[in-house]
Each structure stands twice: as C-alpha cells, then as structure tokens.
Length: 312
Image (cartoon, rainbow, N blue to C red; front, side):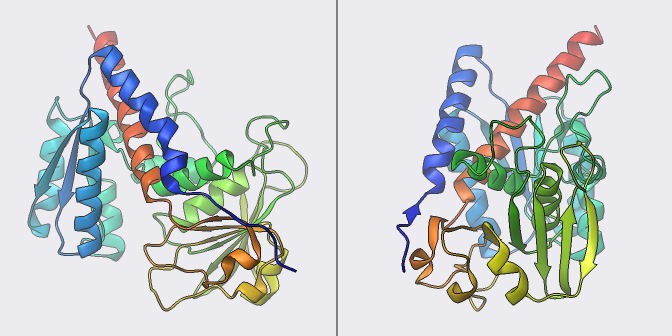
C-alpha cells in the first residue's frame, strides 16, 4: 500500500533564513564579506561558486571569488586571514584530496572559517561542544551541509520540540549513507548528539553512532557493527543519502513505509519510485547549505566586531 508523499524543496526551507539575513543586513546597514577560493577545475565547484555569488548578491553579502593555483592556495588563505575587511573564507574542495585538504581546512582562521571545517570546529562537533568560549556567548560554527540537513529535519518536524534542546531526536533511528569528513561523519555525530541512533554507511562498512541510554547530554559514541544496508535501512525513520555518483541508488524496497528520505548528493540517490514509500521526500539541500553559509558568515562578522570592540 502506497503512502501519500510530500515533496519538500530546499528553496522553501531556506526562505525564512534568507529573508532574516536580508532584514538583518539592511536594518543594521552592514555588508559582511565572504571570500571563496577556487583552485580546481571541478564543474560542480564552479557551479557552487556561481550559486554562492548569486545568493550573496540577493541577500546583501559581498562575495569575492579568488581563482588561484592550488600550489599557492595555502599562502593565499593566510593572506586572507589577515585582511580585516574579510569576514569569512571558504574553499571549494577537493583541491588535492585526502590529508592535504584536511590540512588546508585548518589553515583558515577559526574566526573566519565560515564552513566550520577547521580542527577546532570539527573537534567540537565530535565532542558535543556547542560554544567557542567559556562564557558561552559565541556558538560554534557548524559545517554547512550537515547543518542544512539538521535545519531541514527541524522544518519537517523530525525534531521533537517537547523535549529539551539537545535531546530532540531521542528515540529516532536514522541512516546516513555517506561518511565523508565534510558531510556524512559530522552529520551522524550531530544527529547522535541530539539523541538519535544513527547508522553511518560507507563502502568500508557500517558504524552506529549513539549517545548512550537516557536523556543525559553527552558526546556520542561510535561502534563498528557487523551489518549490511539491508539490515539497518528498514529500521530507519529517516534515510539521508549523499553518494556522489549517479550510479548509486537506494532501493525503495528496503525503506520503511512512511520513511523520511533526504538526498544531499548532487546526484539522485533514490530510485524514481521513492514517493511510493516515503511520507516526505527532500530531493536536494543545496539552497539550505548556502543559507547556512551566509548565516555562519553573519555570526563570524559579529564575533569579529565584538572582539574588536572589547580590545579597544
């Protein structure tokens, strides 16, 4: 028996964030500046850069794309770290791939890391540290696509607002098909930190992310399990896919009736008949990702200005 499926577009979820950004920038008469570094020939990266530029122009953010040779990228990031007028820095990955890209992510100043990919922010995500400072006045910057997925889950009501903040996914079972360091793994950690049981799937196997029993707010735990996709997907209330190839398809037959299906890959990871099983389907998250990028930028702009005032 098929269910009635509602398709939720990223543009609808991002609309309120974008309108709030426009309003804040206009009322405060500010112009946060974002610099993007493009050091590869990846068509997807170029498209993302164009999309970022267009969105920033609409919301009142100054965006500058700097195309550089990848051998010069570290030096150029360091220079941008020192430019007072630059509030946020992002890099279109992959550049070299692997550990060298991880190193580049930590070359970006913490106070300008709009993507939330430097070591400090990644550490804080995995250890459930939600503030940058002891006074708890500066919230951590969260990686944009994982944060976009969280905001989508909040929008469609997966988070239980009756429960205390930090526990609102308690009792939920979620599968994330992707364990990249930029999206899949931090997303699994964030969902587990909010109380969910998360099956993290990649080509090397399946891990389960949990926060232990009860509602106590602690950092998540990770365990390798001897299971297959066929074992965990049917148990999941939510299935989130992010496999960067058009050849991967999540079999509709595995999905629980009424599942919430979210795809953050640039390719369609669900089969064409996904709506026959899902109660809610989100085909892409890109516009929410860009909205979170701008949200992070405004936050960093304010942190920098507050610290500047305090130093006077």
